[in-house]
Structure formats: C-alpha cells, structure tokens
Image 1: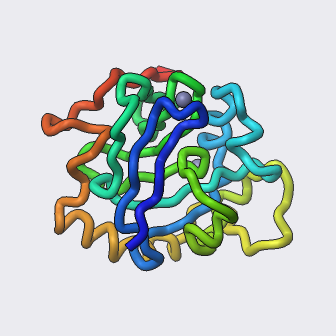
Image 2: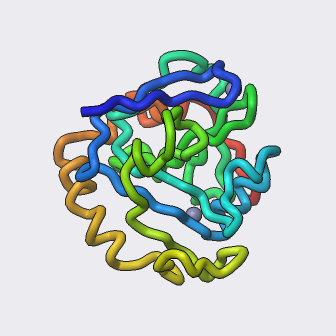
Amino acid sequence: MPTLQLQCHCGNVKGQVRDVNLRGRTRTICHCNDCQAYARHLPDTDSILDKFGGSDIVQLTPAQVTIDLGMDQLRCLRLTRKGLYRWYADCCKTPIANTVSPGFPFVGLMHTALKVNGPMDACLGPVDFYIQGKSAKAQRTDQKVHAGFPISWFLFSAPWMIWGKLRGKHKPSPFFDATRKPPVKPEILQS
Ligand SMILES: [Zn+2]
Ligand SMILES: [Zn+2]
C-alpha cells in the first residue's frame, strides 16, 4: 500500500504516512469557521484555503504517521481550550494536521503537508465529503456540499474509527507521547 511523504514547505519537517488506501481514509473539504480561522492565523492563508474557504483534509489514524525530521519545529494551536489540536511547522508555518485527543484514533492531515506528485485526486482518491457549506465564502455549485456536519460522514467513517480504536491505532503518534502529552504546549487563542 502506498506511503505518502509528509513535508512542510521549507523541508525542515519531514515524515511519512503509511498504508494509505481508499477504504481506510476519508477525504473531506471542510468550510467551517474554525478551519478558516486557523488558516487566517497563519501567514499563507491562500495556499491553505480554496476559493470557497475550504480546507482539504485526509483523515487517517495517528499510527500511520511518523515525523522523522524537524519534531522541534512542531507547534500546536487550539482555537479554544476544547478545540482541536491543530499542528503546524513553525519554520514556514505550514499546517500539518489536526487531532482530537490522545486517545482518539484520528488524524486529519492537511493537504499542505502532503508531498504529492501530480493531482491530489490521483494520489489520494476523490473527495468524499464537502462539509460545513453554511460557512463557505461562496456557494459551491460544482459539488454536493453539506450545510453542516452530515450523519453520513459519521456512518462512512465509523467503521474505520471503531477498527482503529480496537486495534489501538491512536498510537504511536507524533502528536502525543506514551503519557498522552503533546510534544509541545498548545497555544490557545481564546480562553
Ligand atoms: Zn518548514
Ligand atoms: Zn473545519
């Protein structure tokens, strides 16, 4: 099964994403206010968001991801105290991934951190869901966009999330150590 290269724009942070296959991943374009706020907090917002305000995210399990170089550059942002852990590379402010919690078998890899040859669709497969369309910057007419977070996303993702939990795929993770601590203290934007 294919291995993808993970890399920040400047190349200081490098890693790998293993065993990527169509059945074990969900690709989602999220237009939510939080994803947009995160992108706006980083300098190169236009390379993170598409023209509709969408972020292209591939959801996998943390055990598939390693960061082999540049762990010291990893930074974490949380929009609120209970928000997602949003990871980026400090060297060039490339968004890397989002995680929910140490025990959750989920990592959302940002398209900005994946080094793909050619079109994203050819490498990652098609987008499964366009979600949170109610917050999009413009109406998308080329795709079916869900206004919020559709139940179909959970139904689609639940089998591999349950499989991931049962198989312990939330670890090892580059984002939380064995004591469930993040490698760097998250910066919280709003308390
Ligand atoms: Zn970098
Ligand atoms: Zn979002």
